[in-house]
Length: 114
Length: 115
Image (cartoon, rainbow over all chains, first blue to last red; front, side, top):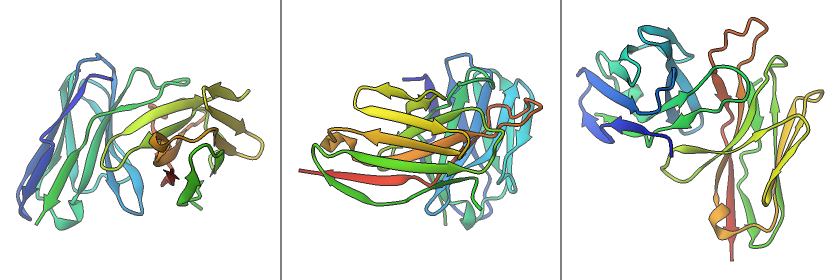
């Protein structure tokens, strides 16, 4: 399995609080992604990174920010969590952007905003 | 129209059956295609990539029809352990090559294999 660790695995917090999720990889892959998965919507891309300090928005980026100061770490921050951000969050990595390179996923973080 | 569409199922089949899943995609510039499986409350895992000529991995066969923008997955001799959700995944291809490996996921097809 790809060396991807997400932390925390589970978190319950209150509306309005800041939350940071961490994705750590040991594969030295350049590309990293954050997704959320909700019933009826499948996996949706929040933000992605194509290198250290290089990030961009995905399709559901409102209310989220990211940072990547090292190749191995990609952080997802909810500045002021809302109940609509209750979801399962997955981090993924990819070696290259081209050709037939798939993404490999971490175990996920289950986040509940009360 | 959704970028990637799958029949959500569920498909309920007996052990040993052959089952086929279909998927259509809307972006004609897409270049990479994959099938992932996802077990309940687990992360998606790559099942197989899909190549233009079609490809087979044991009991699993994937086909791609670019003209019809259609992908299929065939599972032969179903096992109880094949029970999962199968995700059709397509890259967000563009002519400029700036997709950054972004993928679009179908909502998945649920398969239950029973004894």
